[in-house]
Amino acid sequence: NPSDGKLEGEYIAFDEDRSVVSKRKANDKKEDIDFHYEINFKGSSVWANAETELHLKAIMLSGSNVFAAGIPEFSKSNRKSALVVLSAIDGKILQKLELENPPSSDGLSTVGGKIIMTTSDGNVICFSNK
Image (cartoon, rainbow, N blue to C red; front, side, top):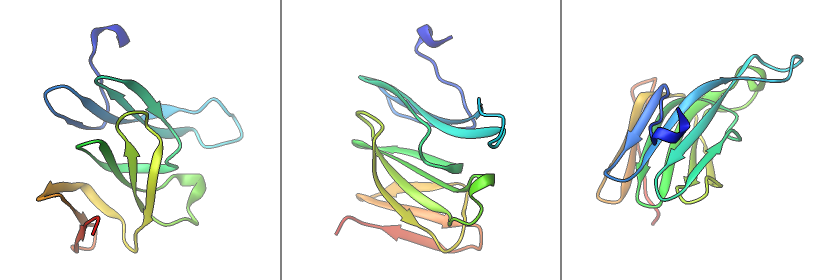
């Protein structure tokens, strides 16, 4: 129920005032893939974004950003896995970083202003804005 302030999805991140989820949603186009993944956000603003073109494996809320990592959607299999940074204010994509290896499921964390991500091959990657 959209009016109750709750979100549901496959991956969820939240703090006291905000929630962000990723969920699989049926596609309206018959000639395209059957599903796509979208990110939904509720807090001081409410938005949905389906433009990542990723089958999401992890999502994280940190400061004014939402971080989402995933593998290419089925119809985009020629693309690489990626970490996408979105604005928590309006859902616009701020940055998309291609990854050499797929992210592990729920493999995002933050510490000391840095983003830590694990990949399916066992690597740990640290991202910093410096």
